[in-house]
Image 1 (tube, rainbow, N blue to C red):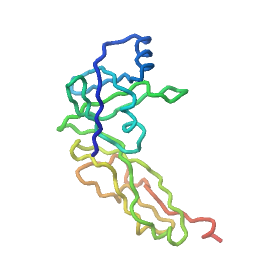
Image 2 (image 1 turned 90 degrees about the vertical axis):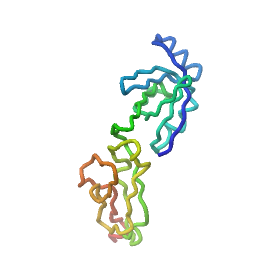
Image 3 (image 1 turned 135 degrees about the vertical axis):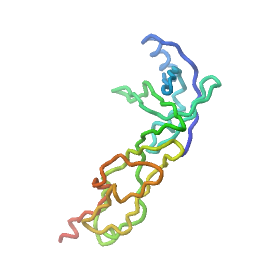
Image 4 (image 1 turned 90 degrees about the horizontal axis):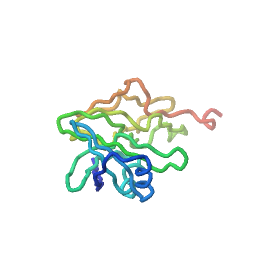
Length: 184
């Protein structure tokens, strides 16, 4: 899985006015927790572009004043009006502890039903996966080449290697539906 680096600077418990000033200067307050750790820091907002505004999942290498941590983005809080990032929570990664992440689903191939005039509909863009950090997939590939009109590929059809998919096996991931042109 890809890793992105974020350089941060320690901060103390700040008042609401001080946090507002910090954001006004182009920084984002953050917290790193997990494994008995609770590190408060801030980082420049420009470093979050490739982490927050992408459908991909990435590990984060946090460099807080020279001390490096491996983490994942746990939560992002946005301003309700202008969608500016207000706060980011990170979870410390431990090699021996499983984590849960929403991993994007990539459809591979062209469905046979689409070639016959059907319409491909992707029902689930992400699947929740539980795995050790070293086994976490970057994305889940689902082959749809044999998918006919009126048929679906389900979660149970996905071959999970070294990770567990936390979704019911009967849930459809993608299906090929009949179009109006086919009905006529």
